[in-house]
Amino acid sequence: MPSPRLLSVLALLMATPSLAATPEELSALDAQYKRRGDAAAIKEQEESLKKALAAEPQDYELLWRKARLLQWQADGAGDNPKLKKSLGKQAWDVADQAIKAAPERVEGHYYGAAGVGAYSQAVGIMKALGEGLEGKFNERLDKAIKLDAQYERGAPLIAKGRYYFELPWPKRDLKKSAQLYDKVLAAHPGNLRAWTYLAETRLKDGDAKAALEAVDKALAGSTAYDPPEAQRALAEARKLKPTIEAELK
Image 1 (cartoon, rainbow, N blue to C red):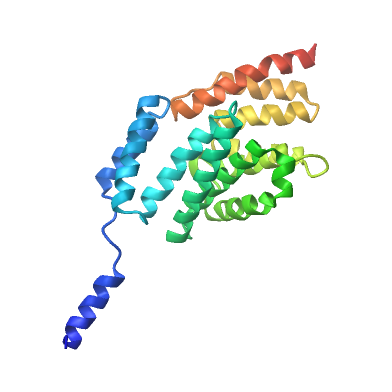
Image 2 (spheres, one colour):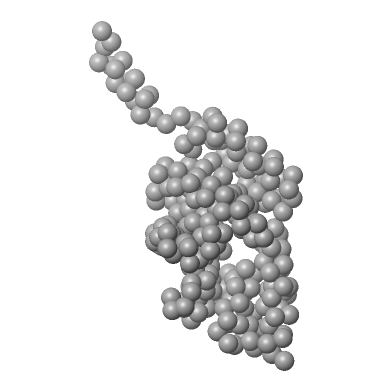
């Protein structure tokens, strides 16, 4: 019969999680993510994450990074609802695994909410409301805001602002939407997505002049803080500006 000391050592080993991804592995993944504007870099990160998660399927640091990449892909699949739906659901599912692994970390909650949001956009907001996805989205997003509202240059607050923008009447609240973007921009004045979304909100609220000022801020901004993200926001701003200018004529 094993000695009490041996039994205690075995119990300790069983309770100790397997070795997590190394700092070097995580640094390499983050470097790949910074180059996500390149399809080859995305493919490279997909392969790296697949290999790392095969070895460590419950590693929080790997799970939230996988959800982050899936959400980036879902965000860029706006012209393909079927793909956006699939990627959004995958991001949601992987992020929920991350939440279970580390419920007091912001990343899992934020990317889980973003995944629910992408899925909802793909199926249509009215259908999403009918399926009860509003509660799932807000549950995750409100937790992310509580943990770190300024995560990723105010991303949780931007998501909440977009939520108030995209809701159908009478649930839509454009003033709350604008207030949230203003809060983000007070802390991160170079956030081009926040400027672009603020311009859309101002335009929908009937203030084309303020919308033009906001979209011009986006178009004049630097992309250095995160080139792939900033370029995506700039593309939206360029499409939006002619609509604003037409409203001012």
